[in-house]
Amino acid sequence: MTETIVNFILFSMLVITAFAIVRQDRLFTIVMLASVFSLLTAMLFVALDAVDVAFTEAAVGAGISTVLMLGTIALTSRGAKPASRPQTLPLLVVLVTGAGLVYGTLDMPNFGDPNAPANVHLSPHYLTNSIEEIDVPNVVTSILASYRGFDTLGETAVVFAAGIGVLMILSGLRHRRRKDEEEEEDA
Amino acid sequence: MKEHHLILRVVTKSLVGTIILFAFYVQFHGDFSPGGGFQAGVIMAVAFILYGIVFGLHEVQRVLPAWVVHKLVALGVLVYAGTGIWNMFLGYEFLHYGSFTPDHMSHGQHSGILYVEAGVGITVTGVMVAIYYAFAGRTPRLGNDDW
Image (cartoon, rainbow over all chains, first blue to last red):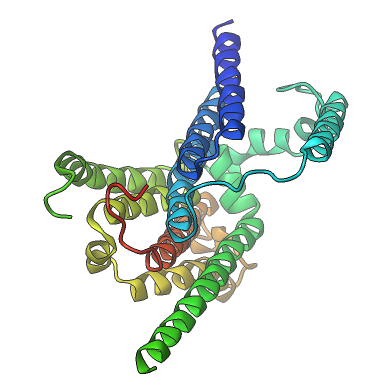
């Protein structure tokens, strides 16, 4: 019962934040509200007992990405461009996509359903045998780091590649801008 | 900047140490409680980014220079893959952690998980801080009223 109330309050605040974001046109406010949105999402993850994901959402979504967005605003402009065209087509696309997603969830198993396909095949093996095979109390860690070590190596490589990509794009621009400034000084 | 934001600077100074300690807790206690390399990495990065926001990019780069961060990005992946290759040298499959202690396989699993989680944490910290440095290095210094 308490969990239902907590979920209800959190989801309502999430929707209110989303509408507040849509109605704002100052980018600084939008970024701050997006940070609030991430923090509320993190709380929802805690309510779902997914504390790992909540850590990441709070640190990355509410923290780091907010800082990066603020840095981007500082480099570009402070306000959103006013919409020049009527918004009926985008609204229609959003409504149709939303309806499609809701329709898609109808086929999904209920939350925590023990007979869901994901819970009948591999999960029982991990839950019953991981203490014997890995001897790590946190099953998430033993799945992530040991049973699926290849996946996690791949994920780490993806993070590595993404970081290198961002660095190459941004540092290349800085190099070019510095060169431009030098040319201006010469001229 | 020195004379501004006294409260922010004092609170940040007391928070940064705690955040780093918490990051290490999440990293090394990941076997027993929620968390692991990814979470610890972002929390560790947040500590440095918070310090950078409040004290400026120059100050945080005195603690953690950009070239160190760039090395960390690659080091983590090398630690992870190196653990797997080490297992192969010991005569088992890639990432078969049991090979560290063939007599007692689950002990080896503990050390293997520790190494690969450390690798994940190092790379994630490096990437997050490196991206922050890359953004902040291009941002002009703003006054309080510019927002």
